[in-house]
Image (cartoon, helix red, strand yellow):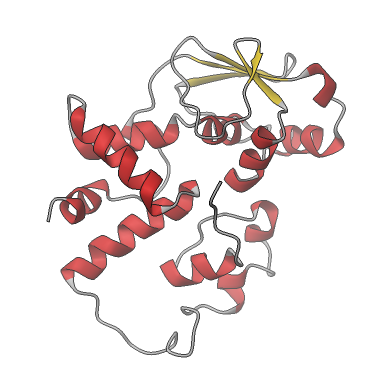
Length: 208
């Protein structure tokens, strides 16, 4: 499976904002963007004026990086969203939010999406009682995401759940801390997403 393996702090610096790809570290003085508030590379501190295309491209790149996707998979989601009824941009966001790794993160099992993706890859979760280790698996209303019994004693997982106790859980998820499970009770909507994404710019980019 292809994935980005370089330093993720470079991605935040390139986009000029925190993408929260390293969990706790993003909130400390060790944050790469806090220490180097400019784009990476030898021309990172140069002044640039973004064109219309550049603005659209940056929005697409930023969204890809929020969810940890490569171009081919992101484009596949866009094509799927464009075939659905409704607004393509909002459909795209709903699909991205419905990924299993994102649902695990949103529920509070992990401190970041990359951490959630790793936990899913390692087979720590079940969906409707069956083990699912595919981060891109799309959850639907009525599905129950649960931490396996054998994984409930892992300190890192317990610490993440405790640390995220005060985190806002989106309306489309219902998290039960006692049972170590989350139920999907709706479809993710644009207003449920707390990320600064201007999805219309992505639609404009791919519509050229």
